[in-house]
Length: 544
Ligand code: G1P
Ligand code: ZN
Image (cartoon, rainbow, N blue to C red; front, side, top):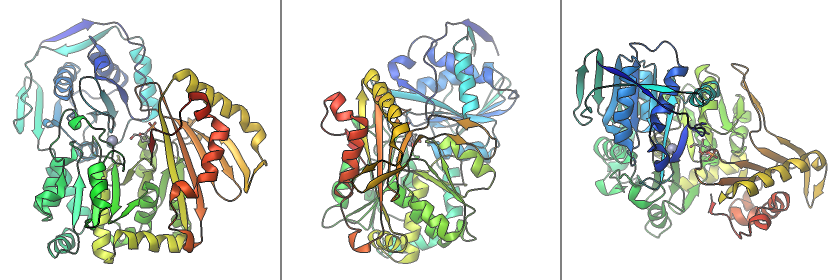
């Protein structure tokens, strides 16, 4: 194999965020941009000569081109085998599973998750380590350091690889194996859930379902698992064809973006169960007939009922949630006397806890839920979990949610996102919040007395690494919280996220609308951060 060393100049903006490097496609198309970053990753890793690398993406615009570029760089750097999803496709949880199953050295996942796709939209790349999970910060820091001084990359002079032909191909010393993207993942799901029970519940009509793949990666997965294996009707999977631009939509599973699903689920003839996933298949939105389940509640309900699912029937070792996720799962953990960990935002912080067996389940308020079966959040896993639960409990989604609230109380929750805020204004807001922290303690705002006001920092209980400045939190004596964070995944300006929660024990008040029930706290959040005042905006771009 002929290998070329190509001289290059560093780019100064290749610092991975919450989940890999995400930029506009046009940025990735600059000469050497992708090449530099991939070479920086390989330069920061050791011991992969002759080893296996998994490669796949969510199929967005630039996916195929990027895969061909990466194949050549990986070949030149000495990998022995590349396992690639057919057509260059792999959902993020499937990639995580394949890294683990085939004992790969690591994997490169091409995705910008729920961000829009297309020539003028977003692209992304992230490296996952051998446990199948996103590279921890010590790696991503090293990639960034390297990218700032890189002066050349290696590439192999080989032809483009036929990504559509399943099976092995040999190019000199490099083996390339194109696999069906769905098969391994579908088998894994079958080993976790009770597929026979699900088949019966669907064929008998007890469960009717609607899944919105949002023209993204989960279409083929949902068709194989829900339709072919579980017998749901083909019409139960909508927007099932993955498109390079996701049909021009945000492939983000929430009520605003999955509007087709939302309309059906809040209509008179709504199916029993409705769900959606995102661009790369790791997020999930759960709804039932005329009810939306917040991701924080979904995590708590999953934890409380895990023993009803075959793979978790022996119980769960512990749970974890990202800091801004509501405290609903904490109540379940306390009730079951198992540990509950609070981590910074981003799935990479769950990896060590999962590897050490400290936790079985984890989740984030941002529509992410998962377990120790892989090291990524997993959209279809959550969908199958809920379906299995409905079938096993013989209860509706609303029935399950209300029963849960009755037992544990309800953590009323919402998140407000202000997107594309000018960077200087966003930084000013963070500075303003920071400056108030020392004086807030003990102050009263109506019924709310400040119990703590700080910036969240985390010490990993397994490897002792620390992560500072992970969001500003203001907590009150009655358990309510307001959290402020700047997004680490946006590609335009800054996105301010405001997370608000309040606990309601009284079952007669559990049906309140979250925005109304949180009205006082929402006003208080504005008083603290002044986002509306400083930007002139009147409302958040997205409320979840
Ligand atoms: C967002 C979510 C976070 C999630 C990440 C990747 O990151 O808030 O929970 O892990 O996307 O899906 P953010 O943009 O807030 O940094
Ligand atoms: Zn995603």
